[in-house]
Image 1: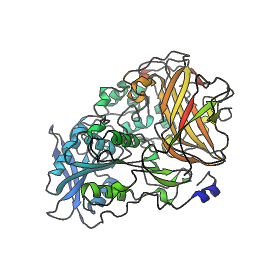
Image 2: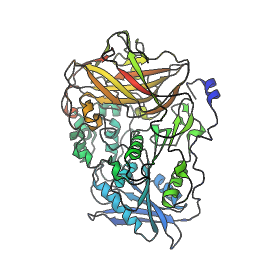
Image 3: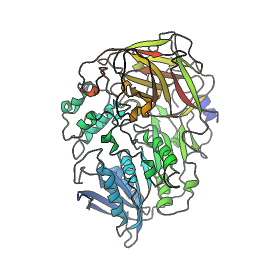
Image 4: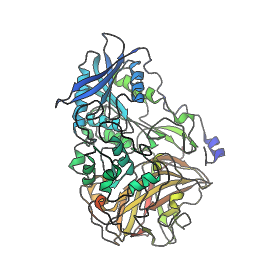
Length: 597
């Protein structure tokens, strides 16, 4: 592995066969595939969705079916290839364009509650067809994962299991399009791409990169005017995204966090660098704790060293996670459906429910639960001599309470935000975080060089005591693995808009109204990182925490005006920020430290 202690890695690199997720035996490819396209299926309001069907070529026989609902065209080559793969193994693969996209009738809105009832109607239509034996599952990734959870909340009688990959979480304030109240620029790009009925071309790609083109777009004010400025049309729902900047009925209509209403078993899959990471562990915990049936309370969770397009590349940004970092993902899903849809006694529910890949030592581990039951929740405190600014600062990070200067200060100018120069930002892998931290607007806290390995696997929380001269601002906290050669691997981060801070409303992503921020007042901010991590900080490395108030263009800048809706602001306010670290205000991060294995 690049940037790492190769000798130690060689000593630690034990065989993975006993730990790597292995599907074992699953349905063999024994059928030719017959297909039909463009079947129109009427929903309860008579809107017709377009459905393509790929099925075993076995006239007169009935098979279980797997439904995939997509806004990206049911003729997408990857989706079609996967449908045929399952059809050869004795499943009818049904691919549906969602309402208002491609060949389906109706009006497209990413967050309409009609997707819930459309999913129910499609499942029950499938179960009634002469080629179906009445057992229906659902699968697919990203938005296709959303459609599974939305459908599952309606509990269609013939839905027996789901397998969502990289599904976003249920709350729009948590990940998409908002993250703790902050608009994520990648969702602005996604919305531009998804405007209208078919795919739109935006430059320089589906998520954009740090180009002059994209930087100019995302720096535009007011942010509510972005789509008009970009020339985006047929996105009538975008003003609603802007107007509804708190957790309210607009988002609740399509939330799926009613886990007690979802009776089916679920197998969720994600990667440490997935842009939609929070959904999979959130859904695992929700179903384990609140599922209404014994089967639903036994979910499975798989987390690999992957980006949003999971399980496609063992190498990310120069890091080689090894051949065993890739798994037979469709085989695992097929085995899941063999058990739940075909009734094959393959022992899938005897497997460990959680499998995680731990970077640094590049090993898979099978676990009993998430978060890992053996976790030691360890506080790492921020401290300094009062000048933690930039990579040259004097900030320290340790398990000892702070004893130095009472705070660190920096200026945040929304007109000159901290910039992330990498394509797609921190969802491309463990990007080198050094360049964004060269300025004094970032404060940096490092442990001493480690003399032994420290494994951190699980969710991360920052407890920040901070003040600002403004009436609103943003706080961004990053966890970084600093290698001996200086490479600073960005592992995960947490963000929060200050006015979303109130823990009495169950966290920022559930805030139904904004808090009041008084200038210069110290407030406590509990920031749950939107991604977790699984990483061993090796000897010779350092654990680093960075704090800033922007990370552009991945997040749209807060203009610090204190307006109820930042997206309508036009005049930025420069804010003087303080991160406090005293006995009274002990700012720290809580790391999920795993004892030596």
